[in-house]
Amino acid sequence: MNLTTGADNMNIGANNMTRTCNPLIMVIFSIVLTAMYSCVGGQAGTEDAATVSPQSSVTVTTIDSTALADSIVLSATSTFLQKNYVSSNAIGYIQKVGIQPGHYVEKGQLMFTIKTKEAQSIGNTINVLDSTFKFSGSNTIRASRSGFVTQLLHQVGDYLQDGEQLAVVSDRASFAFVMQLPYELRAVIRNNQNLVLTLPDGERLNGHIASVMPSVDTLSQTQGIVIKVNNTHPIPENLVARASIIKTVKSNAASFPKSAVLSNETQDEFWVMKLINDTTAVKIPIKKGIESAGRVEILSPRFAPGDRVALTGNYGLADTAKVKIVKP
Image (cartoon, rainbow, N blue to C red; front, top):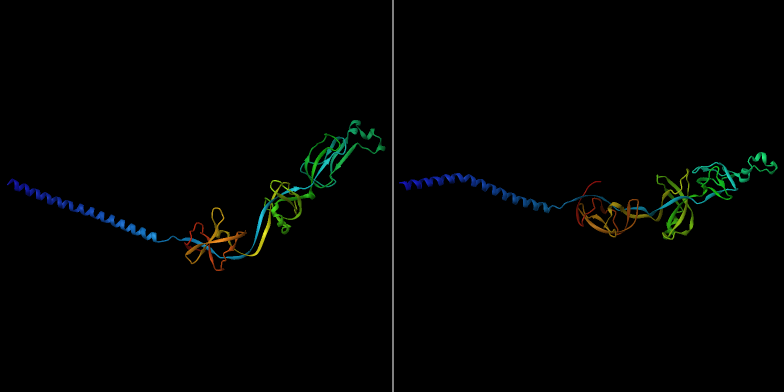
C-alpha cells in the first residue's frame, strides 16, 4: 500500500510541473521567433538599401562664346626720377631756413639765406662795409624746380663750406611709376602703351608707357618700364601699385565658368562632368586655354550649344555618377 501511494504522488507532481513549464516554454519560443524575424527583415532592408544608388545634387551650365583676355599683374613703384641737390653757394653761416622736410616748394621759392664768413667776422655789414661795393654779406638760395623736400641736412647757425649739400628736392615733373617687366615679355608692351594702375586704396589711375630703362636687373632679369600717370593729387614715393598687362586677346572663345572645370592635385589634368541624361554625369577630359574674368577657354573637345555640364556639386564625382539636377 505504501509503494502504490508513493507512485501516485510522483505522477501528480510530474503533471503539475508540466502544467507549470508550458507557459514558460511558449514565452521563450516566441522570443526566438521574433529575433529570427528581425534578423531576416534587417538583411532584406540592407539588401534593398544597397541596390539604391545615391544621387548628388548639381546645377548645370552650357558652353558660351565670349571675349577673353590673358593678362598678368605686375607691380609698379612710384618714384621721382630726378632729384635736385641744393648746395651752398658761399662759405659762411645759415642765417635763415625757409623750408621743412616734406613741404612742397615752388620754383623760385626762397629756401636758405647764408651770411658769409667775412660778413660774420666784420659784424654790422651795413655800417662798416663801403656801400659802393653793393655787398650786403648775405646770399640767398632759391628752388630751381618745384617738388617736395625729401631731405633737410642743415639748420640755422650751421657753418657751411662752399658747395656743401643743404637739402634734396624731388622734382615733381619727374614723378612716375616704374614697373619691372620680365625681359621675355618685352614684346607685350607694344600692345599696352596705355594701361591702368590700381593703388592699394582702390584708386585707379590712367597711365601710359613713357620710356624703357636701358638696363636689366642682373638677378631677376627684369627691365624697368616708366609709366606716367594723370594724378590730381600728390602721391608719395615708394607706393606699390598693380598694373594689368594684357598678353593675348580672343574675341570669340568657347568657355565654361571656372567652377565647372575640375583638375587633379598637380593641375596637369582637367575635365568636366557632362550630363548624358537627366540623372547621369560622365567625366570628359578637356584641354583648356586662357582664363579670364572667372571663365576658362575650352580648346578641345568641341561642345555643342545644348551640352550640359555640372556647374556646382561636381567636386569629387566619379565617372558615370548619378546626379539630380536642381535649380541654382
